[in-house]
Every structure is written in structure tokens, then in C-alpha cells.
Amino acid sequence: MIIPIGAQNAFVINQGIKRNHYLIAATICMLCDIGLIALGVFGSSSLVTEGDLVYQALIWGGVIFLFSYGVMSFKKAFQSPVHDVELSSNRNMLSFKFVIFSALVVTLLNPHVYLDTVMILGGASLKYTGDEKIKFAIGCMLASAAWFYFLAILAARLAPWLSNQKVQKAIDIVVGTVMWFIAVTLII
Image (cartoon, rainbow, N blue to C red; front, side):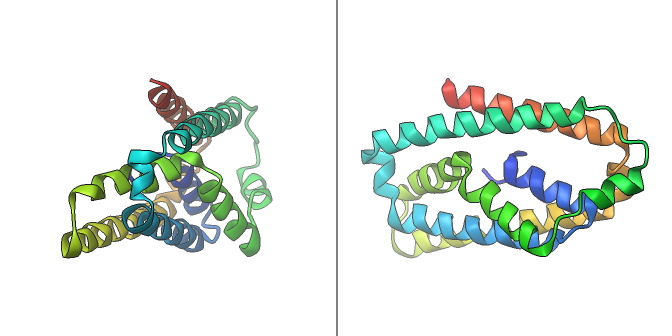
């Protein structure tokens, strides 16, 4: 549930490529996921079985969010390239506070995150009780932590290659395509 490239992952990758507070971005996304996983597993798993209206609202909110994020990715991919890559990367650097704010927005205003963590993982946890439920939640939380830090550090290490304009364009096209694919699967 965590690994597919979504809005959170794309944000963490972009911050890693820019080497711009990328560990903070990963930490905020991970902490939000941990909270939402706990909510899904321990608090609101009943929404999965009883909350059809909530579920539908999350699905359609997710479709709108993912479609919009895909449009932004495609727009970025097909913009005319900036010739001075150094100037471009400096202009795109976000302040520490804005990275935190952006990570919170890309996580907490993304209905797809709630579908994955609260609804799907919450639903999957229904078959567990007691210690098994705790182990399931901890496993999901550890997977989230490992994934976001792995993604951020890998993007930062590969930044010289990933910051190439052609590679960036390809990444933006892949991200836009994945966003639209997930949106379509939510509709289906």
C-alpha cells in the first residue's frame, strides 16, 4: 500500500532530488502515516464495514485529488525546459517551514492516503485480534518508516542523475500516469 508512487512519494522524491529538507519531508509523511495506520487499525476499522458514505466520499475525493496531481505532473513535464539548471533548482528550494507544510498538505489533504491507511489497512486488520493486531499495525508502521526514508535517501543519492531534465520529464510523466491510473482504478 505504501510503495506505489503517489502524491506523498512524489513529494519525497522531489525533495530528495533537490536535497531540500528531504529527511524532514520523509519524517512528516511517515509520522502522518503512522497516525493514520493507528487510526485505521485501532480506531475506525468499523468505518470499513459500516461507513459506505465515508468510503464513497474518500473515493471521489481521492479521484479528484489524484487527477489534479496528475495534471500538475503532466504540465510540469511538458513545460519548456529551463536552461540554467542551477538557477532552476535554487528557485525551487522550499523553506524548512514550507517543506513541513507541503508534506502535511500532500498527506492530510490526499484522500488516497486515507483510503490506503484507514480504510484498506483498517479493513485488513479486522481479521486480527489482540497481539496479532498490534503486530500487524507495527509491521505496517515500520514498512512506512523504512519506505519513506529509503525513498528520500535514494533520491538524494541519485540526485545528479535524477535532476537531468530528460529524467525529470520522464519522472513527471510516470507520476502523472500513475496518478491517473490510480484515479481510474478508484472509479472502477
